[in-house]
Amino acid sequence: MGEVKWVKLSTQMFDDEKIKLIEQMPESDTLLIIWVKLLAQAGKTNASGFIYLSENVPYTDEMLAHIFGRPLGIVRMALDTFRKFGMIEINEQNYISICNWEKHQNLDALEKIREDTRKRVAKHREKQKALVLDTNSNVTCDVTVTQSNEQERRSKKEEVRKKNKDILSGNPTADEPEIPFKLITDLLNQMSEKNYRHTTPKTQQLIKARWNEGFRFDDFKKVILAKCFEWRDNPDMSKFLRPETLFGTKFEGYLNNSDEVIKRAEHQISGGRVLKRKNDLPF
Image 1 (cartoon, helix red, strand yellow):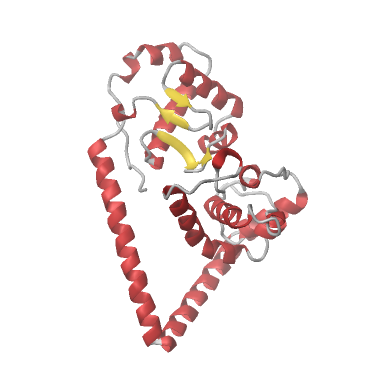
Image 2 (cartoon, one colour):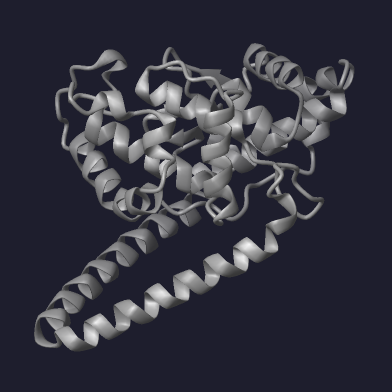
C-alpha cells in the first residue's frame, strides 16, 4: 500500500491537556518529537493508524529507537506515556496504533492512494505479460538487454566499492550511514525464532560485506522475510536460516527472488490460510 505523504497537525495541538502535561515531563521536547515521528510513521505505513515493519512484524522498542535516532530508554518512556494518555494503543501482538487516527489523516487522500496502488499493480502485471510475449518472440534481443542490465549493475557496484573504500575498516564516515548490525540481527532472530548475536565478528563481517556492495536495511529485510517464509516450516531447510547462509555470496540472488516470495506469502495470508506456527505468523 502506498504511503501517505503528509499528516494533519492541528494549530491547537499545544492547547491539548495531554500535550501540556507532556511538556511538564523530563525530556518533554524529545517526547513531542517522538510523537510527531509516530504520526509520520503511521502515514508511511498507511494502515488506518497502525505502525509496523510489515503486516506480520510489529516494531520493537529497539527498532523504533534506531529509526527515530533517539535513546532506547527515552523511546520506551514515550511509548508508555502515550499509551497511558490514550494517544496510542498497543495490542497483545505488540502492534502500535494511533488513537483517533482520522484526526490526523485525510481519508479521501487515503482512498485515492489505495486506488492508485491498485492501478499501478494492474499496470505492472500487464507489462510483465507483454515482456513474456516479447521474450518468446525475440530471444536474442532479450539476451542483449539482460547483458546490458548486468553490465549496468556491475558498473554501479564498482562505483559503490570505490565510494566506500574509506569505510572498509568498518568505521563509517560522516557521509555514510552506520551499519545497523543489531537491527538486522534482531529481525532475523524474531523471524527465525533463533538467538544470533549481532556482536559476533563473523556476522558483522557478512553484513558489512553486503553493505559495502551497496545493499541497505530494506534489502536485508526482504531477504530475511522471503527465506523465513520459504524455509522456516521445512526441517531440512530451517537450519539454513543463519547469517552465513542468508548474508553470504548468494545474497543478491535471494534478493532478486524476494518480491515474488513475499507476494505469495501476502496472498496466502489475505486468502485466510490456516496457520499452525507460533503466534499464527507465516514467516
